[in-house]
Image (cartoon, rainbow, N blue to C red):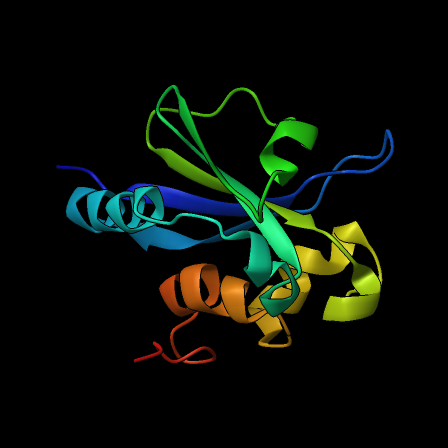
Length: 138
């Protein structure tokens, strides 16, 4: 078994290169557990105001869309290719006014600093990548 590199990035909203942060490694079992948790998520129409963002997870040759309500139909992933030993989390801020991110490019850094305001992102991504800044919710 080899470790999986985790990369946190953002969906760019222009032609500029997105932010790309290498945030650590996990075991193959941790990756499987994380992916299983994401596949259990089901968006609810009345939950849209409880979080402000969505994300894609790219692994091997697959992509999981985890997004509020019908937003998955509107967003197309920008990162198409990743290495076999990478798990890429592509953040998609819905509203910088709700979550406090200055721009899409600051989203990965905001999350890494512990400043993310989205309960949804804190629960699914923050507690996974940065458990010292986003404790697991009970």
